[in-house]
Image 1 (tube, rainbow, N blue to C red):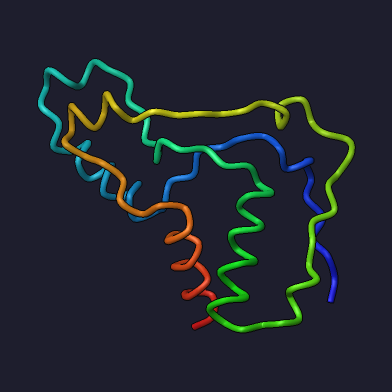
Image 2: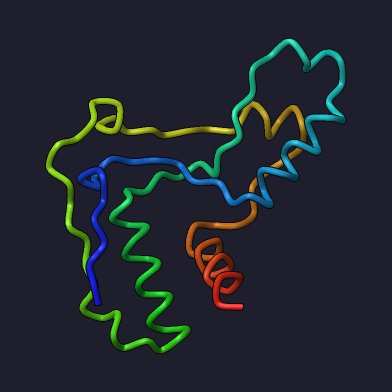
Length: 122
């Protein structure tokens, strides 16, 4: 029966990667050929979302999947004093790594949230 306070205004973009995709990416790193070892690689899903988006996705999935009507009134109180490092957008690309390691992420943000909620519920 209480609202969630974000320590940011929740409007800045971040790229989220599901942990299983990250682990698979790291496993692929161990198999990289020597010619690829002198590069810096990034692991990203490749699509960015705001924290408010994540909150709304989570709320929607939770309401639909677990039928908790008491969450329908839940909303985010956005913090007004934003840390300068939080006020940056972040968009990532894994294209170089996808080519070098033959890796790609599989779990999109909504599926990842649903998986996490399922683990928490059980």
